[in-house]
Image (cartoon, rainbow, N blue to C red; front, side):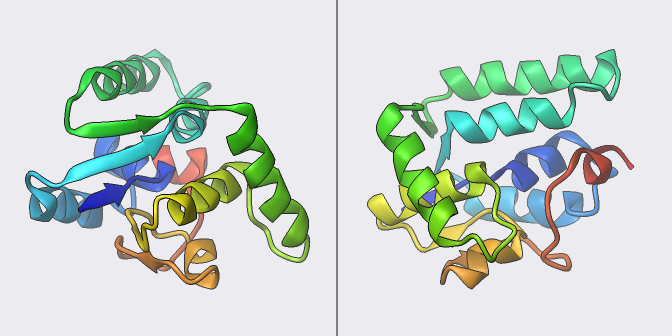
Length: 148
């Protein structure tokens, strides 16, 4: 089994003051040796969340991404033109939703890999039929959540 990791999880693992930190930590310990899967787009969004939050957070975020890139326990799905187009297709079809393009790429990737659960609290994934594994109110991941 692989557990797909969304931006909210990475933010909560990095920042112990994040509203999802407790839930993310519990999920992290529960998963144990379960492999994780994430996309380069998610890592981009994660780094963007900390781009203006000071050198301390920025440094820790960069370290986390570098460790992720070299971890044998994490399957990294590379960005590609095809993944962009698949995400864009869902983004266009869901014009009535508040989905980000990164979310759409993640959802398309999860469908392609036949994964039904995600380490996120983002209610948009639930709207698309996925099970979200992080607690909280199902809110969006944002830099504001990340550092408040």
